Image 1: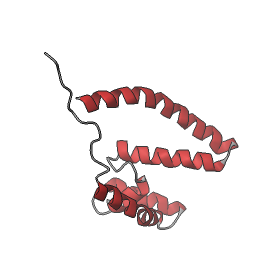
Image 2: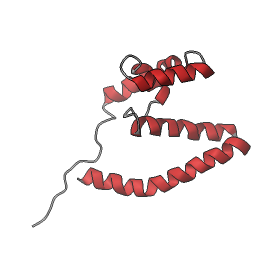
Image 3: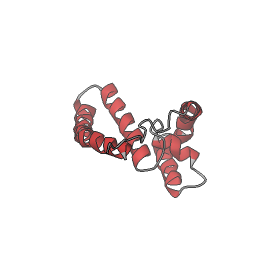
Image 4: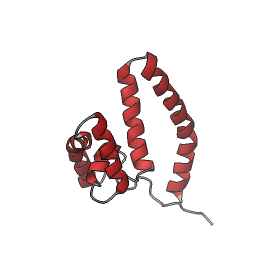
Length: 122
């Protein structure tokens, strides 16, 4: 329960900032430094992967699609689409990101960080 409450409160602050961040990405992408927009798009990519596709927060949609290429229809579509822009994009993304995924899982960094030890006093 404590983790859910903390998550809700955090989202109340993060969601408006995420919307602002998206608008900044759009603006900067057209008239600002490309590096700043690229970083924002990468963060948004990881957010979508974690929240929409139930992937790892530290992995891109492309890398996740390559891992799931034999099991998920959405992954096949992502691979097909990205191949239109860059051949073997998802495979390269996975090759680059898989060592990080393995390390995070090995170290247990994906595990719950807020303990549900809410103590109610009588």
